[in-house]
Image 1 (cartoon, rainbow, N blue to C red):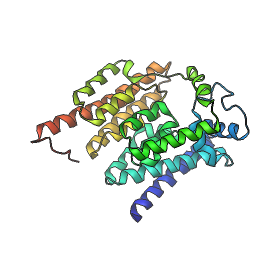
Image 2 (image 1 turned 60 degrees about the vertical axis):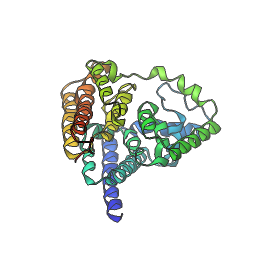
Image 3 (image 1 turned 90 degrees about the vertical axis):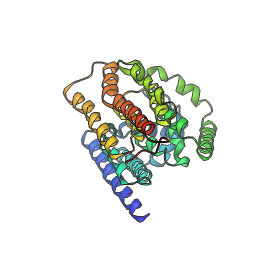
Image 4 (image 1 turned 60 degrees about the horizontal axis):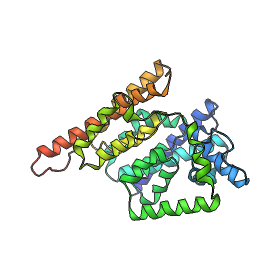
Length: 297
């Protein structure tokens, strides 16, 4: 336990410090986390938290930002991302240190640049009481929520929903009125995204449904797909998907996307299709073993 805590703390400290450094150096304020802080600040001031079309997060995100409203924004974002990374590392280590390799994926590092929610949402898959964070960014959290739901997780989500409505009863209507301002792509509907329906060939595999659900969610950038690294379990699967993911990073380095369809196509090719290959290959391996034996690392 001490070793797990130490390794998780080290990863959290390193990632949080690096996030703070990037945001400070690039003058990015609190990155994407600023909008959660904005919600919390407006609510504390008894003002409309949806006073700008740029505010597209539900009030539940603002509740998680309440402890950070008095902290300088870059530090707040660094703390948030560091805690997110530490929790994810602690959850991953339950199954061995191999799965820590998912921190090498390009979508994780894309998230560091703007202090994204995808890391802590991925971590919530390992801790039922952390499941309410899926409500902070529902379009990314819903696949995790639906495939990792438990009684404790559901009760925790109900509690957070009730608390948010008690704080501001009208927030769902205010938030829904902002959703048309969210530019996005849906991976399943961006060529060659329709190929992802092949995941249904492994319909008995929870990861197949997880992949398909994620592909149906509106997304904006590569960091949103980081949750898909809940799918690969072995060293080989993780390293192969990590390697392909950097294809998107290289593409972005040399190319300025003209629209979100271009971003979606790159995400499908570099992240979604490799994950589909993992699901299909793993299923064929299980089927070839007598009795469908367990996957080997």
